[in-house]
Length: 219
Image (cartoon, rainbow, N blue to C red; front, side):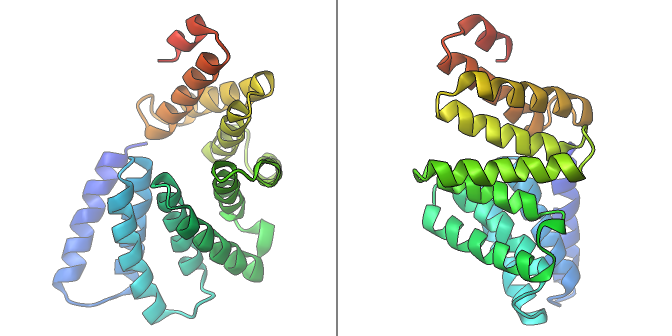
């Protein structure tokens, strides 16, 4: 959960690599890592800039079906979704899933995350039935493959809970959101962006459900 520290370290590493003047796999990985942490911290435009720079490097070094390109595009889709650039987000997550499915499919650790991102895109663009199916599939895969306390499992549960809240299906949303928050509170720092997002989702749930006292306890 020490995202600020990780961001500082990666910025320093990127600067040191760039001073050598080479577009190396290490530079691409560092830019992608920085983009990932910036997304967690809510700096979506800066994340997008770093991720695009990494993608340019990767495409010079690898073939188009390389998994590092897939992971990079998934992160770009997340940044574009947060910036409400839905067409860009959808194109990138479709490309991501094509790469993942060609390589290893549901067995790849980031595959359910890609499903989750695609589900959130569909949710925010009005395709609710497709969105729910994708989000539930992400939850199912995480439940089968990740330990109960792992943050990836909590993240999938939180995304599904957020979707159900938006559909006013509050009793269904509540256990997913409570479980996600309690898990992240234990596995991440209290002030981690992941934990804060889970807290925010609970406050939103109870506000929408007209339960102001419970909402206040999660603010």
